[in-house]
Image (cartoon, rainbow, N blue to C red; front, side, top):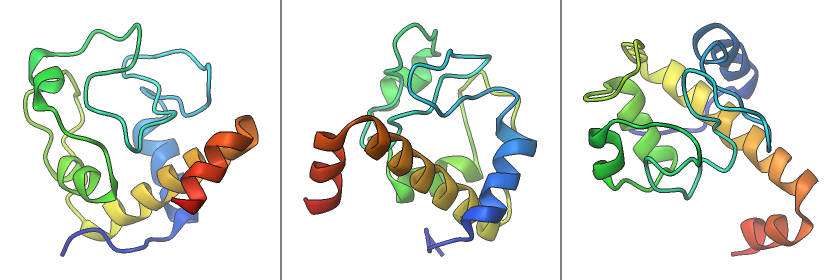
Length: 121
């Protein structure tokens, strides 16, 4: 299937129940058991400052996008995550839509210059 636009509200609920115990989304928020996800889209794997990644994650060399997250959230090999992934493709799409929309909002509210680049490139 691949990524298709999902329901951000359902994705927010998935984030709360499946991700928030290990990850934060806001700029400047601390890493938890997992890294802070602010600025995730367009970032290379294993790059959050102050977080200790596995070699598999650092060496993966993936640039995060809707498509790469869709694949990754279905099966997460070689990481420290105790999370088995989201088997339902619809759940993955909903979660990714929420992440993308939340990061877009956070970035645009914190950086006018970045939001102009993000929206018009």
